[in-house]
Image 1 (cartoon, rainbow, N blue to C red):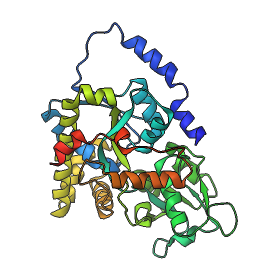
Image 2 (image 1 turned 90 degrees about the horizontal axis):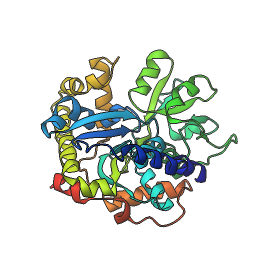
Image 3 (image 1 turned 135 degrees about the vertical axis):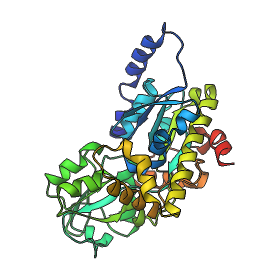
Image 4 (image 1 turned 120 degrees about the vertical axis):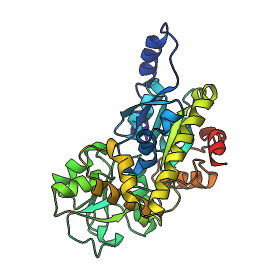
Length: 344
């Protein structure tokens, strides 16, 4: 835990000092132009990209400057340092910062996804027969220690009564691989399993047709409501620019409704068209398949409000991974005021 949290916290004081010195003396900025850092680029975040491509942010008078963190720790560093106004990342990072006593506490102000969005990729040609017990005696690359993907996978494995370790009757869960390096490490290692989000899973299989997607991690936890990916901003930003945040969530909610209507009316091609500009190299058909895969596991939150019940599930997963060092109060890390206006 200390190592992971250090990756968020270490050096932030210096970064913050540097960013502050650069900002001081500059003219006032247009806060309708939002600097947003995403943890990764995935169809798992479909309503957000649809809001961009369908012009819903523009309708609200907003402009999105999008950058990619390649991991929740990097995205949180961008937020705390001031290089991002909002981040789209795992809410576990907010728990970590609250435990470290960060001034101007980052808070979740909108939930986007509500279950694990990663898929298990296998080298063993066992898509039709896969069961979680098949992981016994195998190595699975699950991401970075302390990140929600690795912790949720650990929770699923241990909830099934399996033991994590390197023995023949255990599951070797590797958590030493950075988020963006999982696919390449999987190809070049002796691991028979890894977890990837879309479109990375489909892209990897296109390069290696002998690989297969065998399950979603969300299905292994019964698609339990987990506040998996959320919009996060510092407390001061939420207080000073609540109107901007409300417009932001309204645009995302409008896109969610659009995509849901496409899915329920079997218009996946329309949904794919709304996302295609954000994913170079993917075909309309591939995009439609990925969208259907995420809707089939009920990936997208129907309400932007993170409930306390969902938050407690997050804490249970985090605690199970040994990543908590004290109590975290829901009200201290979640702002429901803005999202409640959108959900009403």
